[in-house]
Amino acid sequence: MRPTFFTSDHHFGHANIIEYCKRPFAGVSDMHVQMVRWWNATVPKDSRVYYLGDLTLGKVQPFELRTLLAWLNFGQMIIVPGNHDMSPPKLEAVDSRVVVMKGPICIPLNGRCYWLSHEPMEHFPGQVNLHGHVHNHYERAVGEDGSLWINVGVDVRDYRPMSLKQVEKIRRGK
Image 1 (cartoon, one colour):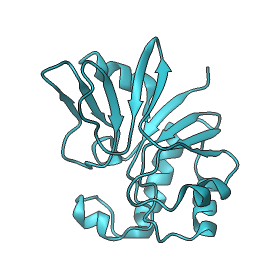
Image 2 (tube, helix red, strand yellow):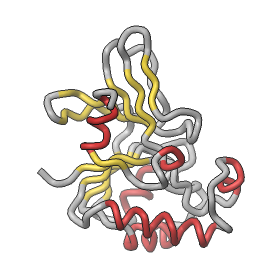
Image 3 (spheres, helix red, strand yellow):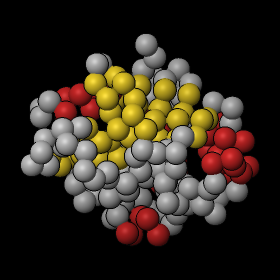
Image 4 (cartoon, one colour):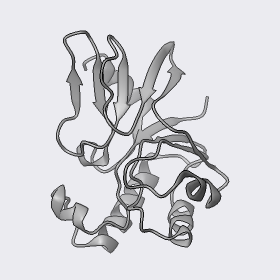
């Protein structure tokens, strides 16, 4: 099985996100360089990355996105678009390694269904939801019914994608 990673909310090209989320970058160029460096130090080139929305701010041009994706290590990227992403046909057109799937989607991993979405899902008793969107509001939340929300967004994950092993550890409460 190829290495599997989850992430969201890089907001490449979005200057205001630095202030909004109190990111430790001097500007957009610094944010891009650092986050690409940290991504590539974490994600092997043959990996499958589930990207749960807001890779960019929607105003990024296709040629800019093509360049960005060429810099990032991954073998396949499944994007569940967020509220700031460009339209799915444009996302898929820039790189043949990219597949866009409208969320929420359920993926079976290690004998369990993980629900993937950009925004946190509601009303799914006992299930696990990997999501982004909430930035630095929380890392993990547990519902009274046993539901588990895991925020894979970069603002609570040291600006790096999370491995399946890290997700499993959080799921087990460790």
